[in-house]
Image (cartoon, rainbow, N blue to C red; front, side, top):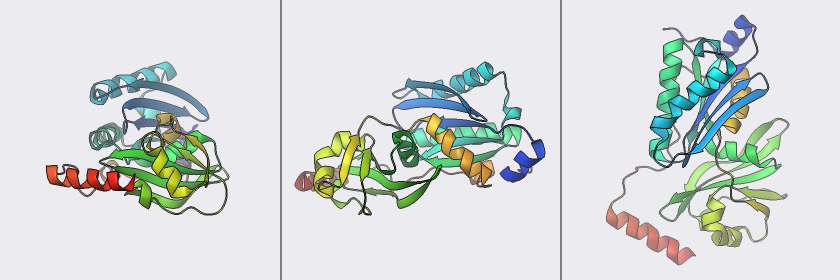
Length: 250
């Protein structure tokens, strides 16, 4: 099957831009349908049930909009970083749905989605990566899009990346878990903290719109999650070493 360039597809169809977005990188499972500026959403706290909840939620938003997959221009998914299993679920479902209908796929950073949800100008997005580490990235709003000041990375709170001058907002669950250590690391540079924000399909869709318009969607087999950890299953000794390092830095 031949997959069109996303921009060419939009031009050829001459219809409002419709994008389905999936996000399962955290304990939350969410789906959003972007309909040329209007959004239909579903979100539930899934625990470990993402795989059984995701497709029914997709069916619900499509049914509410009275659309089928053929009316979409692309499928977006939260590419991570985040839960290894969750990332595979969202990517796999996006690939499967897109491959069956000739659609393209676009992966969106979960950290960028948190920045989008913050409504701030400069955001340090941070998620707990467990084992004494965090996933973090720094973003600055550039009109309706975002400039990546520090790319997504895996690190400890004590070795979190430098920030440029200006007022920054800290966002994401990493601040709920590693707040004191991050406060010491930035020593007053973080003006405000939004620890309850998590990646959502709504923000994945908002960011995906710009990416699709720029022709950055790809064929399903070219879409991949963002794995920042070299390997997922650590040995007991590796976990003990990581925990010890985190204790010494706190």
